[in-house]
Amino acid sequence: MASLDDLKKRIASVKSTQKITKAMKMVAAAKLRRAQESAEKGRPYSEKMNNVILNLSNGISDKENAPKLLSGNGQEKTHLCVVMTSDRGLCGGFNSNIIKKAKSYFAKILDEGKELKIITVGSKGNDQLKRVYGDKIIENISFKESKNANYFDADKVGKMVIEKFEAGEFDVCTIFYNQFKNVITQIPQAQQIIPLNNEGEENSSEESYEFEPDEDEILSNLLPKNISTQIFKAMLENSASEQGSRMSAMDNATRNAGEMVDKLTIEYNRSRQAAITKELIEIISGAESL
Amino acid sequence: MSEEFKVEIVNPEKSFLVKDDVSEVVVPAFEGEMGILKDHISIISFLKPGIIKILSKSGDENYYVEDGIVEFKNNNLSILTSTIFNLADMDKSKQQDLLKQAEEEANKTDINDQSKYLADQKLEVLKTLN
Image (cartoon, rainbow over all chains, first blue to last red):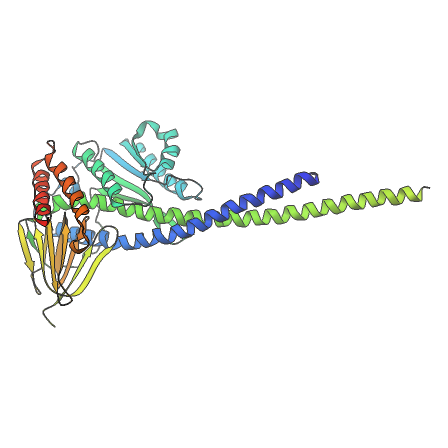
């Protein structure tokens, strides 16, 4: 059995760990509120954008010559995957969930004999993926300097993706991120952004629009913006998810540390009592033998 | 009053402005300024750098935008934009910053005609503000 001193030290160390996890939980909770708010505030923009594009793509007359960003370039050979993760750890299964989802998708693509290219956003994803898919990663972006997700960063990623698309470096683009549902649940998502996948979405308005300039021109201006918007949405969802995930992970850690302190304290008290009893027995039996 | 409609301006971060007593909005559409009144036909267009004028009962407002999309439908005007500033809140130093940025952009040589045109537009609008 561990000595009294050892036990004392362990209790102290678990207690200080608990303090850290507790503080992290509080910070995450505060950040979560902000992140969640901005995720909710950002939704109208991406929804409206989606609506407009939906209306536009329905109104487009010449499906053959539709912009490539909408209809694809007719091939499905090279897939680009944008995997969005966090820059910091200690957030439970947040990063692993995205990576798991992404890896199963990668395996599927490689099985089909297609080419795979990866862009990682956030350093944690890069760390986990470079072991297996190191040679597939063509770009690694990290926004450690930016405190909050902002549109400017998203636009940078979006422009890069479009540039690569126009240079013919890939045919299909999918982004991976965690969708924020609530503090305990975050759903890893794979969303195809090029070509735009609007299948299964209900078209509510049958109304005809007046376009100025014509549909094609608006669309070709709008689609690049939409890519940035979708990436921005993913970033917002991701940052809310990260904080939520961190909060529940740290909550668990704090609780576990508490349990451990209790257990160790009992053990400490028992062994202290045992030592006292032992000493007493020794004294009494010594006195008796006289 | 029946001559009013609703306008909503959203940027990626948040819903920037919602007003439902608007009588007229003038937007700098790509092919020229466009005034929108109630019961305008449904329209989608996009913006070039310029000033959005919102005329309403509760006072007129002017906003500077650099890009965006307008959608008008069922007397709901939605403006989606990534860069927007209220002219009332814009001070000289902010204006100078934007002007400098625009100048840099316009002086780049490796951009295509369209972005060149947009940058020139930006410059022009910003200059008229001063």
